[in-house]
Structure formats: structure tokens, C-alpha cells
Figure 1 (cartoon, helix red, strand yellow):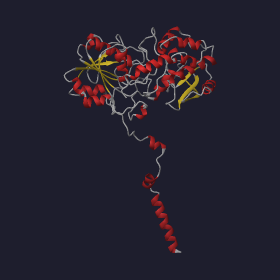
Figure 2: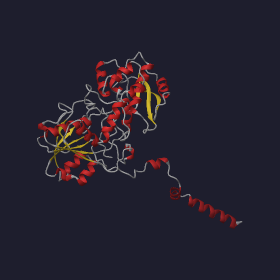
Figure 3: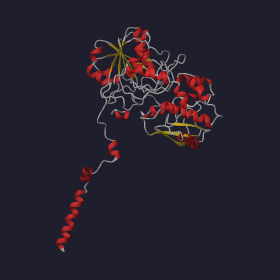
Figure 4: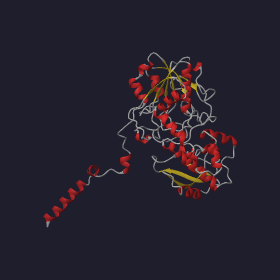
Length: 425
């Protein structure tokens, strides 16, 4: 009997040994959390990193200007402005700031002033204040202008037009432009929407390109330079490891907010749907609340009714959840709103631009007494963002989204042919 007890105790000891934390860690399958928390095995090498490794000779003995903002960083989140300023081989003489300013602290649409950058001591010239294009005075101490700024892949974002104006000035004053390429956070394959039409050009749509163009900022610079006759002395430093199907979370890179209301890369996907009608100030798009661009609502909306109507459309890659929220600022500040939160289930099939049109169409049908186009000044801005006024008119007249989208297919096909010439990846 004693031997039997000893055998049982020995077997229990072996069992406990096999259940030790190390054994469990070795033999068990990682949890989902453990898998998703692992760093990406493949990391994109940014244009700025390749430039500093292999192309500093392009600026040897030259005075260097830099168009950037907080999104201009390397993979270690070191600021490009700081890296250039501290590099003994580079003579950084000027910084150029777009909308939101060189350090990204200014609210959307507010004018930005010239200053001296407090960290580097380099003069900062605002390109979103009195001037949108560098002047001769701004460029008198510059031979070459580097561009390192994170684009988001949507036509209405002003940074790409600031880049274009820098290229125009460079052509006019015989300066060189070097664009340090960066990923398109929402990928380089899907292209959506109508093109900007003559008479609707603005700083949220300067050239006839689709709302979502599926190009990197470097590819876009090449397109602008040749297709739209800028003709600057342009060089693009490509990335390594980026492929067109990649979304930001597949790049191995950390996201830096590109502006105050784009805290996460996923925000850009939502912005493609709601950033257009947010200009009308009749619907809240979540700006002023904790989830910018993810929400649609107003005090007069029944969230359950709107969610039911939108979910019945079975739009690809998105579902709508009813919710209540109270904006802290912006549209409907301090008022309790009802509406929906967009939940993107599959970014690869989510058509953001058409989803935005479906949302507007549904709200118009459910709430005809609330005119989305009630404020003429806001309608003018909306039409600039849309690149035309016929979409607004078609929505007012009750035309379907499918009817509306068919109208831009011919122009879109032409653009896709042109676009192919400038793709680097």
C-alpha cells in the first residue's frame, strides 16, 4: 500500500512539473492577444531613411529647405526636421509649414504664422497663412526643398496641394524638389469617386483627381509635375518594402496623427465616408467628440431608425450601430445627438466615398424636413470638396447613388490610364 501511495505521489509530481508556467508557455498555442501584439516581421523603409542612408550627396554643399510637420518622422519616430538640423552633412536653412503648422498644433482652417522653430532654431515659413506658395523671399536662402509629410490618400487633404505649390515655386525660381516617399495609409489599389471639374478647383481639390486616388505622395508629385504642367526639377526617393495592397497596419510603422482630428490611421477610412458632408454643418460627423469621422448624427435623428435603414442597404465592409453622443465642440456642441457609428468590417471592400453618398441619401429620405443643403456658404464649400455641384443637385432630386456613380465612370477610367504612368510600386 505504501508503494502505491509513493507511486501516486511521484505521478502527481511529474504532472505538476509538466504544468509549470514555462512548460505551459512552451507547449500552448498563443492567444489572439499575444499574436496581434507581436511586431510586424516586415517593416517598410521610409524615403527619409533611404535618403539619409544613400542620397545625402544630392544636397551636399546646398542650402536645404524642408516641408514637413509632426508626421514627418522616421521609423523610430524621430522628427525629420530634427534629424536634418543635427546632421553635420546637411545645411538646413528653412522649414515650411502646411495647414496646422510645422508642429501640428493649429486648428483646421486657421491661418498659421511665420516663426522661429523653438527646437531647431530654423526659420519657419507658413504656407497656410498669407501665402500658400513660397515667395522669392522665402526661397532666397534655399537651393533644394525636401518634402517629408504624411499624406492620407484623400483629395480633400491640403498637404498635397501645399506640396504642389512648393513645386510650382521651385520651377519658377529654379530650385530642386526632393520628395521623400511615404505609404498611403489606406493602400494603393482602391480608387474611388469623381474627378474635380473646371470651376471647382480649390485648396481641397486643386487638380482633376478622384476623391481616393490610391497613390503615394511621391507618385502624386510625379503626376502633378508632368500631367498638370508644373515641370519642376523633381526627384522622388522611393520606399523599400511597400506594396500596393498594404494598409498602414501592415507596414510595421507606428502612426503619428497627421492633424488634430486624425488620431489613428483607421480614421482616414471613416473620413472618406463622412468628411464630405461634415462640411455642411447639418450632420455631425463626430468631430468634437471622441470618435472623429466615425459617427453620423443630429438631435433630430432617431439612431435606431437610421441604423436599420443603412444596414438594409448591405453596403460592403461596413455595419452601422445606433448610438447617442454629445459633442464637446463643433457641430451641435453640448446637444444630445442620436445617430450611428460606422464599424468597418472589411477595409478591402469598403467603398468609403459611395458609403458617404448612401448616408446622405438615406438621411434625405428619412428626414426631408431637415435640408442638408440649407446653408449656402457651407454648400459652396461642400461642392468644392466634392469637386462639382451636380452630385448635390442629384441628391436633392432623389437620384440613386448608383445613378450618380455611373456618371463619373468614364472620367475615372481615363484617370486610371494616366495614373499607371506614375506608379512606383
